[in-house]
Image (tube, rainbow, N blue to C red):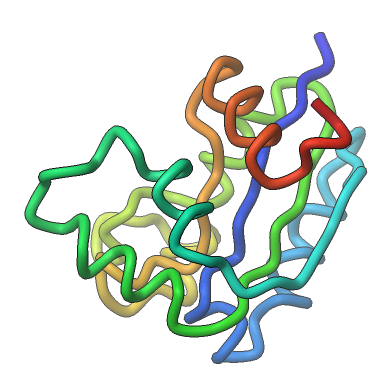
Length: 137
């Protein structure tokens, strides 16, 4: 069953010149396609919508500051089991726990700045794609 997922390459990925490497890993997966891609700097309103479930948590404000610290690359990826697949490709948030071969395992340095966001479910993907690419919703 084909799915769509939102992927964000976070400011640390852009700053460190890893956009091409990460997109290349996504493109090399058989039967996955990138259907939307945009470089942008996120405003507070977009970030508040995207991270609404984290309001009040101790990491919320540092996350908001980090995510607005520079440009990000937002993309929509489509394909068979792509939600589960991109999350596996990304690896766990903690780069020490992330396996070699995963994006975070190969390039991650600290948990807060973890290079990539990928939707965690079909519901999240639909909600997040509407925020970043309303024309695709």
